[in-house]
Image 1 (cartoon, helix red, strand yellow):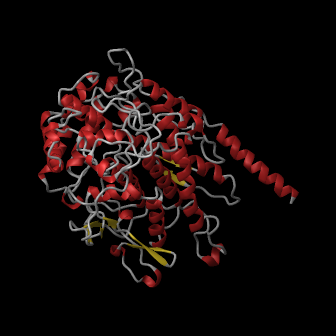
Image 2: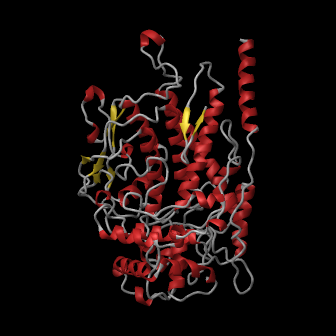
Image 3: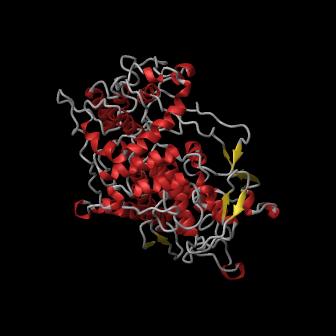
Length: 580
C-alpha cells in the first residue's frame, strides 16, 4: 500500500509537470477599448461589452467611463466586493430591485434587473487539463473592419431567414439574395491577403452557395443536410422498439425525445429603441418569449427551432445525446483503444475504463474546463460587444444620429441600403403593435435598423468573444472524436420535413461519417447562437479551436493514469490529426 501511495503521487506529479510545461501564451486584444473617444476625450467604450452598466437613454452609450473602470476592477481582482460596487441597471437606480423601464414589454412584465454572469471564473484553478489562462484566442475583428461587415451582414440576413425551413434552403429566392450580398463583400470577394494576420486568413470564407451558406467550415460541415444527424435521430431502444427516424434516444430505461419546443414564428424582439436600451441596462426579460401550442414540439425544422434549442440546452446535452446515439448504433471505438475484440479473446470489457461511463463523465469534465477558459477570454482579455449592441450603433448611424459614432461609417456603408431597408421593413412589421413608434421621444429614430433578436432578453450577461456554447462544443466533440472511430459511416441520413412533424430520408451524395456529423453538430450548436443574434462567426470558429485545445490537454494528462497500452487518433477542426 505504501508503494501504491507513492506511485499515485508520482502519476499526479507527472500530470502536473506535463500541464506546467505547456507555454502560457500572450493574450492580445484588438486595442479598441480606449480608441474611440467623445468630444471631452473620454473613452466611449463603443466597441466593448457594457451591457448591464447604466446607459444613456438617448445615445445608448454608457453614462460614465468610471462605471466601466469599476467593472474591470472586479474582473481583474475577482473580489466579490468589487463586483458589488459596480453600478447595475438604469442610471440612478443601482440597487433597486425593480427599476423603471422604457419599453412596453419590460413595463408590462414588471421585470427585475439582471446581474452579470461568472466574471471571476477565469481566475479559478483546475486540477486537470490546461490552466484557464494557458490557452488563448487571437484579437477579435474591429468595428471598422471588413470582416465585421461580413459578420453583421450574415447576422442581419440570418434574422430575416429565421423561419425558413432548412429543407427549403435550396429553393427560396431569399436565400439566394443573402448569398449574393455576402459574396459581394470585400471580405469574401477580394480580401487583401497582405494586410491580414494568419488568424484572419484562417477565417476567410466563401464564395458561398446554397450548400455552404450559414454553415461551419470544419470537415464534413457541407456534406448532407444542414442539421447534424445527432440532433435528429434516436436509437433502437430496449427491445429494439424504435427506429432511428423516431427521434427517441435510449437513456437507461427511459427515453429522450429529440423534438424541441416551438417558439412563435415571425416574432422577434428588441426591435424598438426603448426595448434595446432597456436590455442594455440589464432588463431581465428571460423567459418572456412566446410559444406555440399546436404543434407544441417538433423536430428541428427552422433556424428559430435551433435558436430555441441553444437557448435552454444544458451545454453538454447535445454531445451526451450524440454519445448515446453512437453507442446505441454500435459504432466502434477508436482502433487504438483496448477491449474491442470478442470476449473470448480479450477476457474483459470496457466500462469503468474505456467504456460508456468513462466517456460520458468525461463530457462533463471538459465542459467545466472549457467554460472557465472562455470566461477568461471574455472578461479579462477581449470584452467584445455583442451583435445586438452593434445593431444599436447601426440604428443610430443609419438614422443620422451620428455623434461619437464616426467609426461606424465602414460598417453601415458596407451593409448596403437594400439590406438595411429590408431590416427596417421587417422591424416595422414587428413594431406595428407600438403606435407611437414613429414618435419615439428618446432615440428620435424614424426607422428601426436594430438587429432582430430571437430572445426577448437578447444576449447573456457576458461579452461575446469567445463563445461559451462554441468552446464547450469544441471540447466535447473533440473528446467524442478521440474515443470513437471517426472514419466510420453512419447508417442513416435524415432531415426534418418542412412541417417538422417527422423525419424524412435524404439521399446524400457523400456518405455521412462520425467525424463529419460530430463536426457539424459542433457548428450547429455554436452557429445556432448566431441564428439567435447573440454571437458572430468569429466567436464560433475561434472558440471551437479553444475548446479543442482544452480537450486534448485533458486527454494527454488522463492517459498517464491508465496502465493499458493504448492510443487515440484525434482529427482536428482545421485538418490533420493528433495522436495521444
